[in-house]
Length: 271
Ligand SMILES: NC(=O)c1ccc[n+]([C@@H]2O[C@H](COP(=O)([O-])OP(=O)(O)OC[C@H]3O[C@@H](n4cnc5c(N)ncnc54)[C@H](O)[C@@H]3O)[C@@H](O)[C@H]2O)c1
Image 1: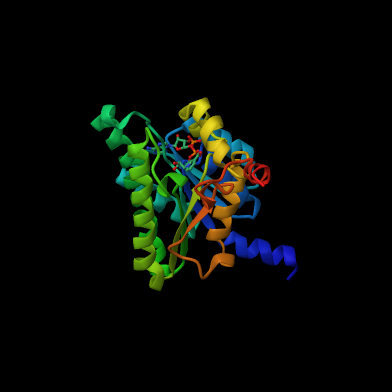
Image 2 (image 1 turned 90 degrees about the vertical axis):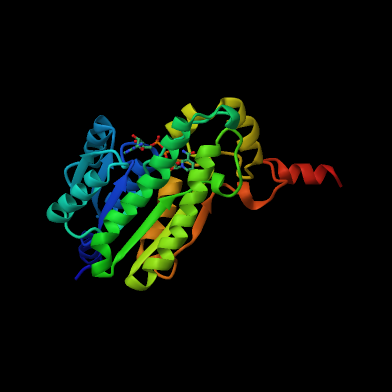
């Protein structure tokens, strides 16, 4: 068998379920996995975005999509059953659906709190649980969840988002402990700002440029592909001994408390 044929036949055995697939990081994960021959099962609330994704992937990619809300457990179960019937056994899971609703903590409404916790944390749990129900009996599967640098500290104005992402890290470590000896690995990535609508529409420019970028040694935000490549690595057999970990993909933001993007110049000036 040629190298190409071998790669294609082993990749054909993979089916990735991605939520939040219509935009940003989820969309990039679909593109990168599809480029390796992985079949794509894409879920999102945004029907137009899913249709655009299918167009972008093209007719050569085995693709199935569902318009659903990740808070709806029955809808997630129905999609998993549909994917298994039409694309084959799910092997890879990336729960990317998420959002932020920022407000000063003393003004944050119960609705804002519940919405973010429900989608980012409960929705992710439901995706993991639903997919694991079919992966665990086969003793094969890899899940990568979306944490954030906000799960490495706190962030003013984002008490709900930070709580959801800290909770998600606890979820990932618990699932990794629970499912590791049954063949399913569970990890997370923790991005700094990524150039998506969540960042550009959700974080004020002065905070993005003046605070986040100033503390980022690499001096820029990530492109979605840079996060998706880290996810693809954790999903793959190249990470076969990695479970329960959170991979920082943050341009060095969490490398030190006193970092800022001109850090080395600053140090030189003090000599
Ligand atoms: N962009 C960043 O700077 C950044 C940084 C760290 C972590 N993250 C995390 O990465 C993940 C993806 O974020 P993104 O930047 O790609 O955002 P995005 O807004 O570009 O995409 C999020 C997608 O999730 C979908 N979605 C939202 N709620 C949903 C629901 N209830 N059911 C189904 N789909 C739903 C949206 O329709 C959208 O297509 C999120 O969990 C986010 O918290 C993003």
